[in-house]
Image (cartoon, rainbow, N blue to C red; front, side, top):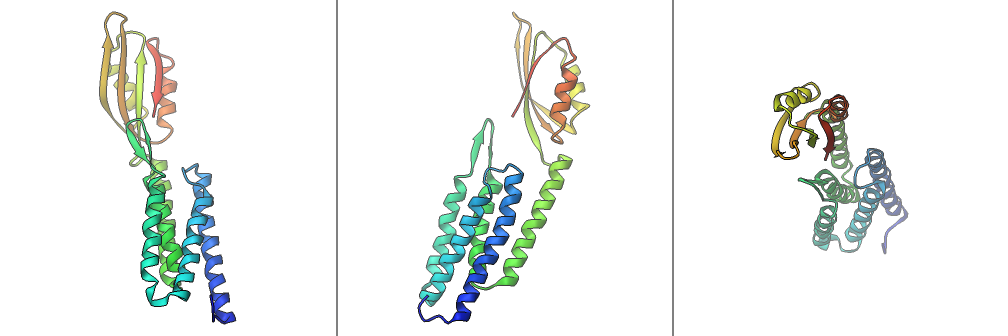
Length: 215
């Protein structure tokens, strides 16, 4: 940054350090929660966005807007790479959105808008806390479960076992092999994380139970 005095350098470094610390804290939480993207990607994205934004603002000033827009747009493609298709659903939308958000966060920090950056970061923390609460309570959580039996079983019996463990469920499909007397049923189960292990434990004691697969 040519022609910049010492105070400007201190300000630039302060903005980078704050961006690094806050993105690191969020990234560590995501890694501890075994999310697709660990702390490294959040730190790299945020400080890169902050660093290039500071440079653009110092060197280009009035012409910095296109470059700042390009940073945010390019990070959107990086976030899209976090999307994963597993079985019947696509996961990683929150990770993709959070990567893009931290690029925006880095740009905001570079511009010295601490109040805006602080408000954005606080809202992220509140959203994460609410997400953890809803996950613990099983609100909006769903799991696809496939149950295989060794002989023909009344569906009401299986439904009864599931209802003892899950808040709600839906039968998605059923396949019956009359010759071998086997059945395969697919359910979408809505409930807490522990409901599927609890269901497996209950079914294990049934003579007709063969296997259970959860996705």
